[in-house]
Length: 339
Image (cartoon, rainbow, N blue to C red; front, side, top):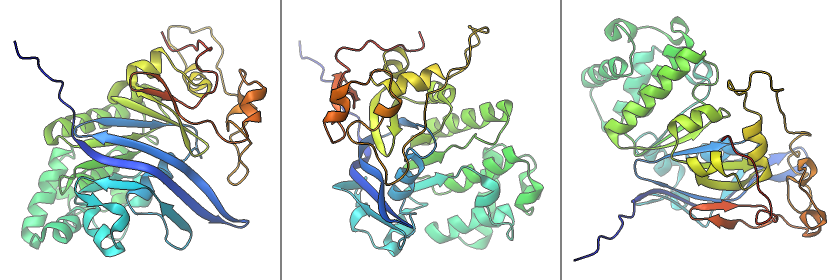
C-alpha cells in the first residue's frame, strides 16, 4: 500500500531577519530586531505583545509604509508569493500594496479621508489597481459595502466617514482592503475601539471573508481572547523580538516563555470571579536602551545570573514541534497556561 505524504502548505509570505531602525533625537535605534516568520496560504497568524513591542512596525515595514527618511528597513528575505519586496522601488511597491497585500488600520476615523465619500475611497482602489471605469468601480464598491454588512449601500456610498459609526467605519476599511482580493490582509488591531458586540461582528466578518477568498491574515492585537478565537498560530513579541512562536493550542496550554505566561495570566477569567487582576511588573525597555542579555529579565521572576551574563539576547530554541522560544531556562521551567 502506497503511503500518503503530508501536504506541505504553500507559503504566501516569507519574512527572514527583518530589522527596522528609526531615527530618534538620540540617533538611530533598532525597534524590530531579526524577526523571521512565514504565513501559509489561508492561515491566520496572530501577533501579540504589549504596546511598543514592534508588532505594528513589523507589518508596516512589510507593507512598505515606514517613512523613508526616518526609518531603515532591511531583511535577508522578504517575499510575497513571486515578489521580492526588498528589491521593489517605491513605485513598484505601490503597485503591489492594495493588490497583493492590504492593511486594515487600527483607527478608521484617522485612516479614512474626511474630504471624500466612503464610496469614492473604495472605488479609488479599484481604479488604481484594476483600471475600472468610474461606473464599474462604483458598482463594485457598492457591492463591497453590501458584502461587509453596510445597510443601504447605494445611499451610504455617497456619505462621508463622519456619518458612520465606529463599527461601520471599520467595515468600510475592510471593504477597501478587500477590494482587489489581496493574498494577504494585515489587520492591525481592527477591534480596539469597538464595543464587545461590534468586535464579535467584525471578527466573524473577517473569518467569513477569509473562508470565501482563501487569503492569509496577519492579526495584530492585544486581545488574547480574539487570538484564541481566530488564529491558527501565534507570534509573541517583546522589545522588538519574537520571544515565542507556536500553534494556538500550545501557546495557551503550554507556554514556554515567562512573558507569554505573564500575558496569559493578565487576562481576566470569568471562571475565577474572585481572583485579583494580574499584571506583569515593571515596564518594557525604552527604544535604544535595551538591557544586556535577555531583554525580559528585568521583569522576569524566573531570572538567574545566566540570563544577564550572556551579554546578548538568547537565540530562539526549539521547545517542541513547531514551537520555539527565546528563554535560556525553558527546559527546566514548567509555566502555567490557561487550562
